[in-house]
View 1 (cartoon, rainbow, N blue to C red):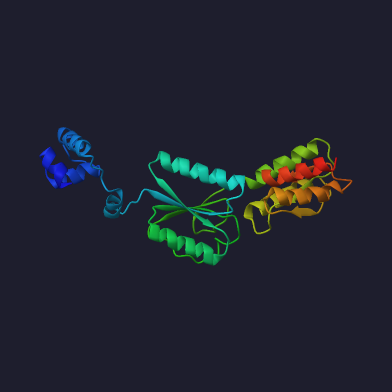
View 2 (cartoon, rainbow, N blue to C red; view 1 turned 90 degrees about the horizontal axis):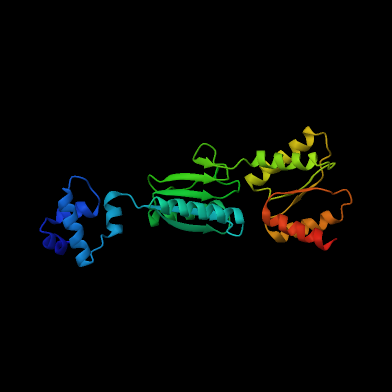
Length: 254
């Protein structure tokens, strides 16, 4: 910084104000400092600036289950939107959705210094987990339930499921089977509830719920079971990957 100040003929404080984007510097002086920075190849230390400002321009993402298309699309959208606003993204995968794992992820993010946290974790944990949040961090929960503690961004799980079931019934099917996600999943349970409500509203029988774990393999096993059900003519599957497994099993069964 001293070299830049010397070349530009200004004080080190002026160089600091320019490099940090602070107002109050005459435009001609600013351009003079920027030219000196370019000539000397000087780049401001972003970590030092963040420490001084208390703003790190980084978002932390706590993500459980990186194998599902939905979660990865969510991560992609978060990272892309953050980058457009000048933020980096730090990912911390949680392999086992326990309170200890979630608490540990929060602790690690606190050590890494982030401005906000996005939690993509569908299991029944966030409304009861006792976690230590990084100071002043903003928290947003995606596709889950966090009670009144944090802001939640969710899709219309019930509306989408109900529309799918009603569509199949309108096509003339007597009833609709359902391959659901894990019982621990908020999204899965909302879809199950909407499926049941749509069948009840139409006065149709409710078949047994078949459970999967969001994977194509679990959908395949459910599909093999459905292939042995003579009354099964329509299936509502809770996610794309399980649907692929169901389709493969039904295709193999003819």
